[in-house]
Image (tube, rainbow, N blue to C red):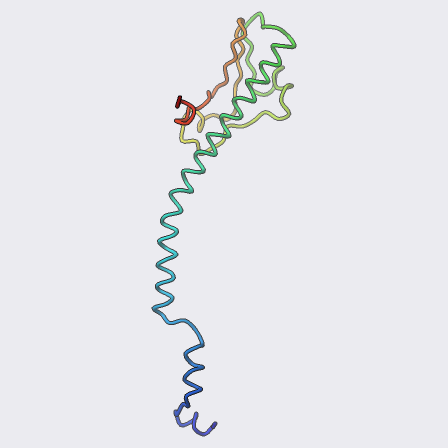
Amino acid sequence: MDLKKRKGILTMNDKKNRKRRGFTLIELVVVIAILGILVAIAVPKLGGSREKAAISAHNANVRTLESAATMYIADNGNPTSEKSDSGTGDIAAYVQEWPKPPKGTGVSAVESATTYTVKISTDGKVTVIPAKIETPEETAP
């Protein structure tokens, strides 16, 4: 049999084994094309999900800081003059860690901010800067 292979003659078993060795070029191109189409569909959806997650994280941070300011007012009463805190004052003691604004919200006021600022007016009104981002789900009735 070695003699036949040397002369370029292949038996039927050799032809079957040769076919089973790998994928053809056409099969590989088809698989790569299908993967490309799936990636083209998935990537835009992933970007929207990241933005929604960043907005949700920002709004949760704002609610946390509003709650911390409300607890401060409950313990100390309304301030006699406007109180402001950016993570180093009295209100910061009411949160375990002062949050940082997330990136990727698509809102310039949040993207450019390096920290949150909480203000409490003399009438007890709490304001967090940058403010909460209203989303279509929250404004629906």
